[in-house]
Amino acid sequence: MTTSAVVLFLAVFGASAVEMVEALTIVVASGTARGWRSALEGAGVAVAVLAAIVGAVGVPLIHLVPLSALRVAVGSILLVLGLNWLRKAILRSSGHIAIHDEDLIYQKTVASLTDPDTGRQRVARDSVGFAVAFKGVFLEGTEVVLIVLSLGSSDHKMLLASLAAGAALLIVTIIGVVVSRQLSEVPENAMKMTVGIMLSSFGIFWAGEGAKIRWPWSDAFILVLIALFGCVTFLAIELMRRRFPAPIAPLVPETVQ
Image (cartoon, rainbow, N blue to C red; front, side, top):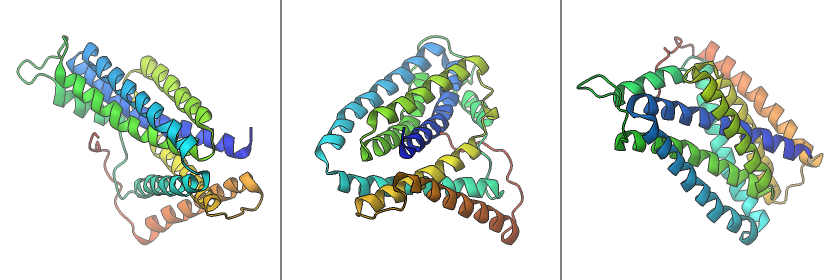
């Protein structure tokens, strides 16, 4: 495998794993509070819809759109996604916004779905549980689909990107079955920072290639971009901590998407 293929696989795997952990948290909470049948059905329908989107959009992207134009567009999308992830990761690491805590999100979701009259969980098929699980999986999965389509189509490696996302889905599912709701052990902020650096690097690299820029050392220049983004991220965190100190943000759940 070439350097770009290896980095692509790792980028898709990491990004997919982060989003899937968040989706898993919502599904587990929905299943616990409203019944597993509804939660699993909602998650299954969401996965089926996302698979249909990949099948409908992925093939035209590869075969109908000129590669240079595709790389510029995809590079821009990846750069925006990557910088957004990096911005949040830097703010969390410097203490300016709260750390994303999956356990607290789980507790909040369970509390919002538990029957207020009896305080008990629903066990039969439940439309609310279905809708919450569907929304969680679909919204988090949409970002996975966007990353898979972007990275896979820009270098004609859709199969590799799909395999990386599939591997992430398999591993996260196994972990979810084994550890259930102990999801706070996943170092999500570190993963998002790493993936943000990789997506930003890919974004600049492919946008440049689409604009006919000849990068030194070909695909290996991606590693140089990753190193540069890593250094800038580290310096930004240190600058935020020293020049703009803020109290460590409490561990509070972010809004469930």
